Amino acid sequence: MVIALRIALALMGLLFVYLGFGFLIDPVSAGADFGIAVEGNHGLASIRGDYTSFFFVSGGCFLLGAWKRSAGPLLVTVALMGIVLVTRFMSLAIDGPFEAFHVPMAVEAIAVVLGLLGAKMLPEKA
Image (cartoon, rainbow, N blue to C red):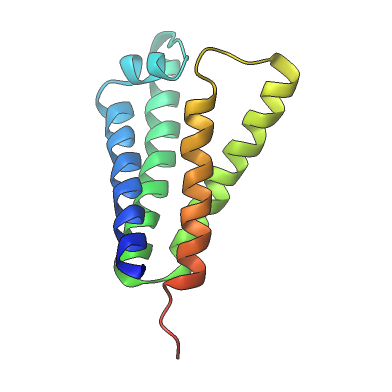
């Protein structure tokens, strides 16, 4: 069970790092995939900086937590994805749904659950 959890965390971490590279290399296309239109250099810099850092930190913390069997990094990603999930629910209530709105929410919910499970199950007992 622990090995499967570590693999799942690592795969989710790799997904997040991959998404981060997409925003770093091609912020216009990556932004469009997320429903964001980029306008000018300010928009490019904001999307490239904000989304790249968000996904690099999220993915890196999952990878580090899975590798080191450490709860701390996993909880960083849980906090980030938890905030995103809560604000998506708020947006759903305020603005209404969009096509395939459930897909990113499912990924974020899975990340929160995996991170919490990992934080509970992976750390070595002293």
